Image (cartoon, rainbow, N blue to C red; front, side, top):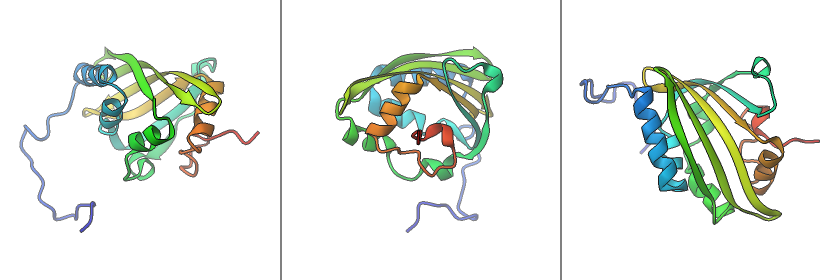
Length: 174
């Protein structure tokens, strides 16, 4: 048995099964998941993205004209496992809080903080994500965060994005 559908696998074509999510609906779903806690947010987050996206990661201090977007096969780098379960094993008290707002018909902005206890002390990773939607899925994704706290998080979690082809998501080698 495989988890990859074949080209001739049946697909539902009804409007009910193919209605794209609006920015308002996506923002509400993200808000609800953030209120519900880390596991729900991790589950919802996994469902937001198109197969191929444009991704940029930046510090809060980095000017917008310096954000470098790269094309990413989201399905390929996201893996088949449960990243939320992995993080819970590394940071047993991990939690998340925040909100999300539809800014335009095709843009959602989420502001959130991940907390927990790392080996070197408390984690307080504040991030802002800007999602650009097309046909109800995220096709462009900007994540901004505090650089030092991001590096602490990566060290504590074993550099989980390593090898994904996106250096800004990986542990600094300096």
